[in-house]
Image: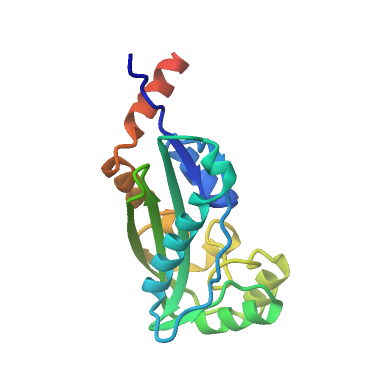
Length: 213
């Protein structure tokens, strides 16, 4: 008798935003396994290429974690990274007040691009990745806009120095692309990768519905 291996999903992130986004599409990871990697851009690396590379690096690093190995067979590892770019310029994930202030000064009244890459490592070790590209235009910031947002500290650790799922959404004049991608996990691309690798996304949905009836 051959026992069917139950697929398991690992999210290589500690981000509550990404966890909440997965929950919105009815997916609950079996394990959260944050994977810290060096996020320093390579020479002449574009924002899009950086986002994809970091997502791939996180998936590879998570694979070797003891907690992931303990799950056994049938493990799918999902990793993501988000990069904000102005042309070829890569904006930092702001960690200091000054970094955040510099980002806001650059973004004020201008359009920028948010590259949100998602990478999936299938149980056979195959890596696949996709990247959403979203154009965002902010209003021109007043001094009160800048000072009040900086005091909120929502910018801390966020690509480009802002979190669109918070107060910064009030600054958005125009957005074309993936809102979930700007938050941190492009859901269309995520489901596409999982389905393509054989993860039962919609079966999970149907199971949840039948369980609730």
